[in-house]
Image 1 (cartoon, rainbow, N blue to C red):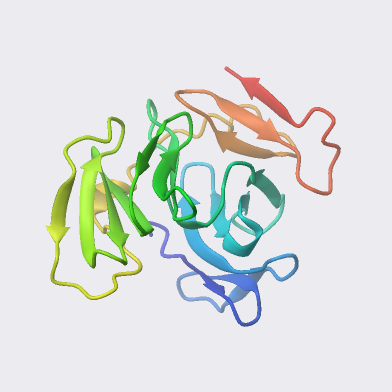
Image 2 (image 1 turned 45 degrees about the vertical axis):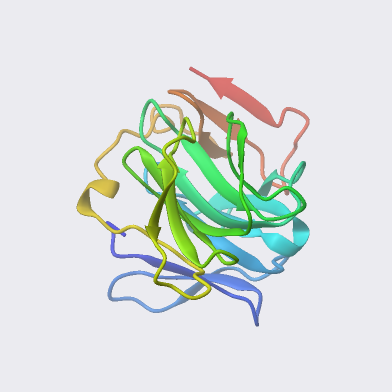
Length: 211
């Protein structure tokens, strides 16, 4: 990533860790994690998202592991891959679900039914994903879902996919910077943000959208 930081999950010890450029590995969260299969970093707010697949949930924390909270755990059966588009005017979170109705979903979007979508990544106007049953890599328009194309069929049981390009992490203003608080700040579609209390804080007023 742009800052030279690497994030990864270790299923054996149930931890998420990071490695800063020139530093030593640091465990972010060593408790409450089960099977983490997808990670996505929002470089604008500094938030880290992940899929807890056995818990059928998506969770989020700050990049240092603080403010950990469950972001979504309803209407999800078998989540796997995760990707984020935090650009101003978009601000979508996409994930794959290969449960009873396999699909790719996005916040505030409908669904696109597939076979066994596993991992996905975003580049410009397209979303790319792997399908383990068809042994292919596909792409389609990230908002409309049309224009589905086979990118590659010369693969065997493709799992993770990630697009690397310098334009994927341009400089962007964090709207939370001008309104700091003790809670975790998440980007919201299309240009606002929302404030969420972590699992250890008062959640009586859990979400407060701010323009």
